[in-house]
Image (tube, rainbow, N blue to C red):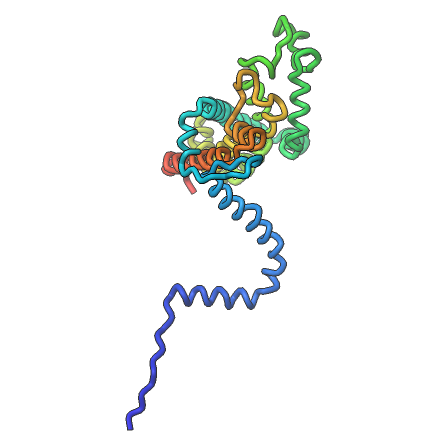
Length: 313
């Protein structure tokens, strides 16, 4: 009598991996229990918010109106016809194009100075890093007072030393408002850049500099052929994160200029807030947010492609 046995089909590799993951999760249930508060917050305030804002971008979603019709890509096409959006994009590019290089350059310069044996080195490092840990609102209020036209300290000292002959309305002058915000942004971010560059400088082996000095390399040559190439990964990281942060700027512009004279300091972040929380056009604001995300994403990919060959790991 022949004995027949049924052969069970082997589970697919993808199903097997999923089953193994669930088995490991059951074994480590206590870890997931402790992580659950953060996971819940992340799912509700990040994943759900992203999905819902994407849903809003295809609707004419006004908080004050009950009807919220589906409009398809109308909110996105409307952006291309919105002159204020293009002005805000140009202001954002100006703010980023000047602020990011100045911030990275000043951070590198200070890091190079503090990487040498200087008396009170720890004190100087602390002083330069204080703006990073100072709340942004506090920094903005202080700088708004410093820029004040009648009794601000900046005008006081510029007049005292004869650099200017009359008081300047830093935040009310269309030609001065953006430079004033850029200076404040550089001051605010230089400390973080300095710390990153200090870490990069201290990871460079001193033997490379010793060998270069033996070969007769000057300080400039040691900088260009040793320091700068070996700091390329740090520079790349700072460039990407600084550009992303600059494109998302909002708080200090809202506090200091409120969009600025003649909209000269209205960046995309502020214009998005204005449309969403002043005009209650949540659908249009959501579409603008996703366009901003696309711009940042494309610019980041471009940076990665452009600098990929220059980075040594």
